[in-house]
Every structure is written in C-alpha cells, then in structure tokens.
Length: 113
Length: 114
Image 1 (cartoon, each protein chain N blue to C red):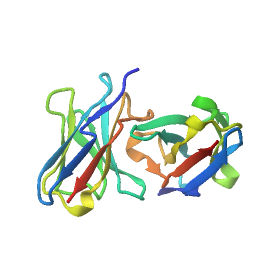
Image 2: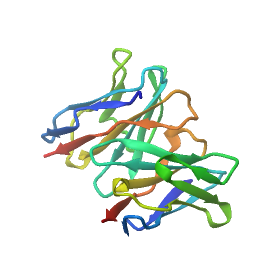
Image 3: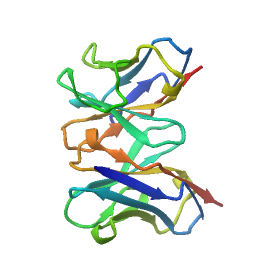
C-alpha cells in the first residue's frame, strides 16, 4: 500500500541552526501539507502546498519556515534558524484531491537543544 | 471557527471490554469528522470519517463512530478491545473535508489491560 515517508525519524539540532525535514508524498498525490505537534499539545496545521506554491498557511508558519518541492518527489520543510520552541513532531501529509482525507507520514521528531 | 474536545487524555480498558473514546466538536458549518489512530513510531492512520449521509460510520479494525448533531458529538466505539488497539486516538474536524482545514483534538491514549 502506498504511504507517505518522512526522514529522518528523529533529528537533534542546536538552537540557531537550519534544519530540513524531508517527506516523500504518495506518488499521484497533488496536495501536500505539514503539521506539527508540540509534546502534550494538539496537532496543528502549518502549511499546504499545491502546484509548486503555498496555498494556505497558519500564523505559526512565519518567515523562519519555508517549503519546497525540489525534484518532483520530495517535499521539504526548512526551518531557517531553529528555536527551542520548534521542538515538536512534524507530520507530512498528502492528498490526491483537495477535499479528500489526508494520508500522513510517521513523523519526524525534532529536538532543538 | 471550529474546535474539537476529546474528553480523557488517557483511557484504560480490559481486553474484551467496550472501548468508548469521546469527541465533541464545534463548527459553524456542517462538519466533516475524522478519527485517526497513531501507533508507536508510526504516522497518523485514518480509522473512519463522516462526511454526509448515514450517521453511523464503520471503520477499520472493528471501530465505529456515530455522528450526533444534537449533541455535537462523534464518539468512537469498539465492542471488544484487543491488545493491539493500544495507541493514541485523535478526533479531527474539517469544514470541507480538506486536509488544509483539519483541526485536531488533543488525543486520547488508549491502554488495553490483559
């Protein structure tokens, strides 16, 4: 069964460093998303991406964040200068159409020290 | 605006007992409702969803949920718990079914006791 894959499963980074989280969505899907879950808190929407551009973003997704689909298969989330409060589980998701349920990856746990 | 409240961050049941995980939502438009499950070290997997039509929705692994508009609830049930059901369960609401508008609850950790 096709699945969304995320790498790495766990990343530790120093405060102020740039980090890139990688996702490979399901191959025929067109819409891509990032969500995050800070420990003990709710899963929160960050950004949606379609046709090589951001279609919607939340207030969490500030200038420190960016997304890219560099090669037609990967979908990346970059955090330019990490802060301690960026520590969270980051989930990638994809959908074939805009109003269909999301398929989520297993998440990347980011720890900023 | 939409929101989801899951009552009980931790629920424990004995193997073979009824599982009941509670979810209440608020939405200014008719909602689309979802239950996701997360097993350790795995992603969020869709258990079931309600969009329109029949209010009793059956999902995978013997789970079902009933949409009750008058109670703004979408509780998840399973008649007989299995050890493999131990996981975290998330209720989510969307105003359109679109993943970009999913609002999640805070999750309920289900423990199944032998």
